[in-house]
Amino acid sequence: MTLSRAVLIWAGVALAILVPSAFALTSPLLQWRDPVYIIAGFAGVVGMALLLLQPLLVGGHLPGLGAMRGRRVHRVVGAALVLAVLIHVAGLWITSPPDVIDALLFVSPTPFAIWGVVAMWAIIGAAVLAAMRRRIGLRLRLWRFAHTVLAAVIVVGTVVHALLIDGTMESVTKAVLAALLGAATLKVVIDLRAWAFR
Image (tube, rainbow, N blue to C red):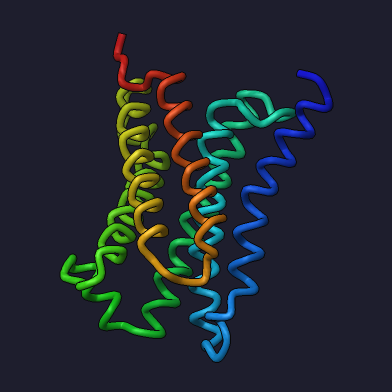
């Protein structure tokens, strides 16, 4: 890969992450909001941005990292993603416990909350599965299949959750980030063929 192409790829990824984040930080909806609410909301934005990196890392599509290093960074980013989700949920709990309880019990009147909880549990499940794979002796192919299914649930849940919310993320840049996330995940799932056990 030429240097110019590598620079273009990294620049494109940076723009896909930084532009929606910048719009979210400067949203007029943040005026008069408590700091905890702002941190919780931006943690969700960071989580979605980190999620875009995951298929690119595991698929080896980020220049300069290589397959093995990419997978190691994938694990680090996965841990950061879990932390972002925990901050997001904890902040929302502090600002409005009844809404979080309704979402966790799947009785929330707002559909975006349900999709967010589904994505949250899938993220936790994927993290636990990754941490416990060797301890429970799970075969590599079976683990890849399970991890891929959870990743698909995470991406679908996150995208629907984000698109249904009329919040701090600007609608056009949010839609572009969601489309890129979906396309990157679909490409890597097809390329790696995790469903093939042969």
